[in-house]
Every structure is written in C-alpha cells, then in structure tokens.
Image 1 (tube, rainbow, N blue to C red):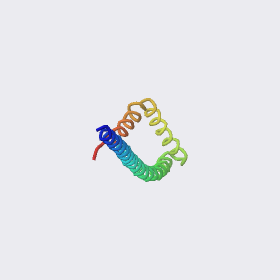
Image 2: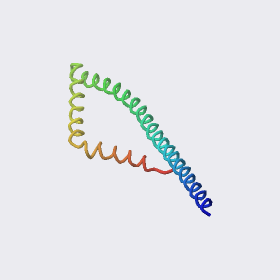
Image 3: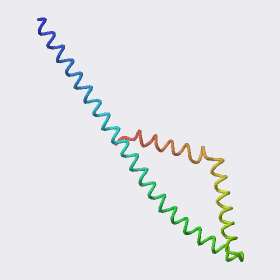
Image 4: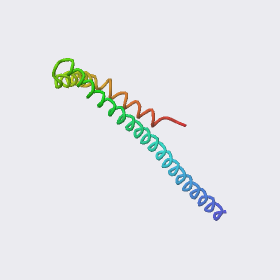
Length: 116
C-alpha cells in the first residue's frame, strides 16, 4: 500500500508539473497575441499618420503661398499659418491630459483587455 501511495503522489506531482507548463505556455501565447495585436494596430496608425501628415504638409505649403499672395508678400502667408499652428499647440498643451493622455491610455487598456 505504501508503494501505491507514492506512485499516486508521483503521478499527481507529474500532472501538476504538466499543468503548470501548459498554463505557462498558454500565458506566453496570449501575451504574444496581445503584443502582436497592439503592435500591428500601432503600425497601421503610424502609416495613416504619415500619409495624413504628408497631405497636411503639402496643403499647408499651398495655403501659405495662397495667403501670402493675398497679403502681398509670400512669407506673410507662412507667418499666418505658423501663428495658427502656434495657437493650436497652445490649446493642445493646455488640454494635453484630457485630449491626449487619457484617450491614449484608455485605448491601450481596451486593446489589452479585448477578448476575441
């Protein structure tokens, strides 16, 4: 009977080791899945940002030249557009917590907690 008990305990320990290895492997795969989901989302957002930034850059040059032509000197248009962006930067800076930090944090948390 003593031999039978040790065999059962050995089987139980072996099964517990297998369970812990399987659980660790599953956690590793879940982490890889979440990480790849977040990285792919960030890469796609980065690509969209670059395209929109190039579009905005070219539009801003055209707008600056057009405003400068309307004001009589080409560089006046660049001053007007730069002043507009300074105003936008001040607004974003004063509301950066509400406008940038919280939505970004919430988006990352939502992606991490999202289940398929």
